[in-house]
Length: 104
Image 1 (tube, one colour):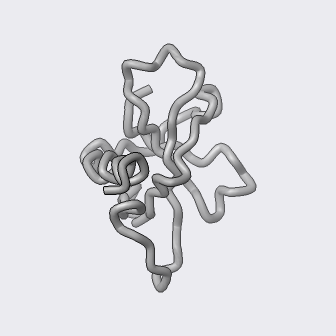
Image 2 (spheres, rainbow, N blue to C red):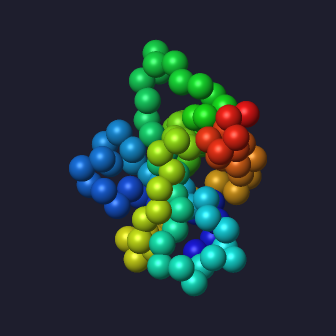
């Protein structure tokens, strides 16, 4: 499964606020049964979020915030068909994970 593929959130209970997840795990780890994902959330426009930690990612024309601090593994079998690939926005996602890991 290609890195930066975007999938519909497999959690139906959370899908209203977090419609998608993006795979941030390297393709080199495809043998694993899980994929490290980052939620992509629809946040209120008036709500301020730290942009380094929660960059805006555009999926199918929709502006969503990546929530790096909520990155989590999901079973690969739960990620069915990609709806988009955001590899062109990879630097924002990597920077967000750097903010989680190193605080910068």
